Length: 70
Image 1 (cartoon, rainbow, N blue to C red):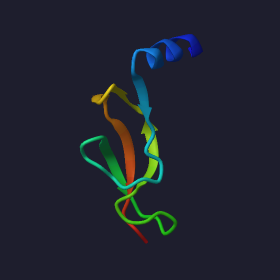
Image 2 (image 1 turned 135 degrees about the vertical axis):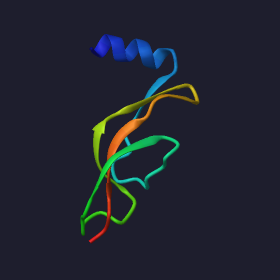
Image 3 (image 1 turned 180 degrees about the vertical axis):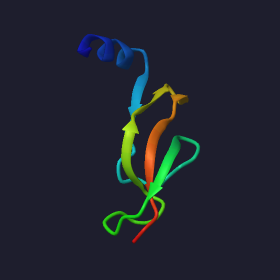
């Protein structure tokens, strides 16, 4: 797995891990919303599956849960 990830990185592949960042529909796919007092409203509460970019192009969006606030 490490060799595969390293080969991808050498060719411009990078992971999208948006934990705690504001929700961006261009890069993230919301799988649901969940109330949370610890995470601000419309921020990523949990990453269900990392996304990937190839150079500047999105290959797979990150699947995330979004905070509804408290």
